Length: 474
Image 1 (cartoon, rainbow, N blue to C red):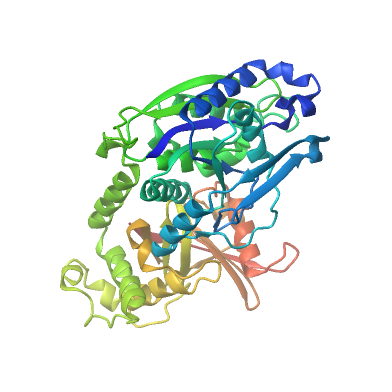
Image 2 (cartoon, rainbow, N blue to C red; image 1 turned 45 degrees about the vertical axis):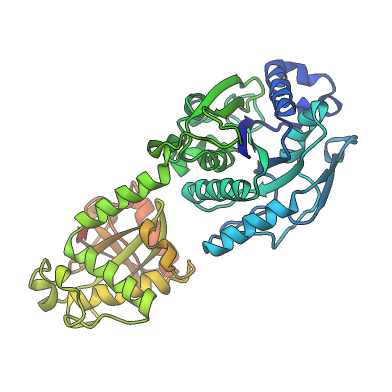
């Protein structure tokens, strides 16, 4: 059959009457919309209800899928133990999803469950659903600290698992919106809060799922949103499909945003599968195409760095300079890259997030070319902050190369400019470096403070400052 509908819903426990004790009436529009969602699910009679929840087990670099055949929970933590659930899990679909993610070297699975009890992000939707529909097994999936693209990709794998088993399923994306909408709210107010709510309701109301991937992570953090990653997983489950969207309600009365939307594929065949595959809505394909075009346009320095890391990761071979440099790269490299010595940094980003960055302050080899080859390998496989990059990640990587100029001593921070100069802070054998023109580093004090932390240098130490310029290659 397939995923026949999707629902974006909030999960405030107070909208359950036994918890709210009358206060739930303040968000009646949300409750009415929730009842409508539940009735629509009852009409569909799904075999499986897939629920993504921000309050299920969550890891920074791994998606947890609840294992087993049964799960239970109650609102006892919210002084309503009488509202309880005994749910069957669709373990066959879970196993199929785990197989698919394993085959694709994707970081998801059933290991590491911290809490078997159902969380309130799962139970609030179930409370409304079970008022009208008592069939259907559930699949419960947590979010992660991975990128939005990874969340979208998980949704695509969920769709594949559902289709391979022929399940008749619905997708419930559980998540509140901003928690910072009102001064009187429990989390206070931030100007990004109302902006987030307005933007996500507009995007959801148009089923403009690709735009969900464009939300800046820092902006989402400042808005204190709850469910964005949950919504993105659901978006991935509708990848390539034209969808009818209907925004049923939005409220911010409590200082927290509650949004309810429904999503239905526009064309469904007799076997329940969508028949109108739309390449314009295959958003990951569009992102891959853009990255490929940008890689093709990159200069020789960046192409050399990419060739170095790919040769090492694929074949375990370090490129010999200039003998092993591919001819198409060799012919676009300037002569000076083989004759000049300089420090160089190779920075690697994946889906907009740092994936590795290692470099040398001063030259350690006979040429800039060798410096780039060595540091590309180190940045991709030896950065202690990250796991080594795998072949499956190549198409998502964005690479920059910074060639450093000679450092010069300066007397004070007044001689720095975060856009133009990088900074080196030294104290004895300890040194911390920060490149110029980095996202999120907008003032000199921040730049110097980060460099000091990297070098393990205290503000009370007798340190010295140096500045340097870079030539950045993209």
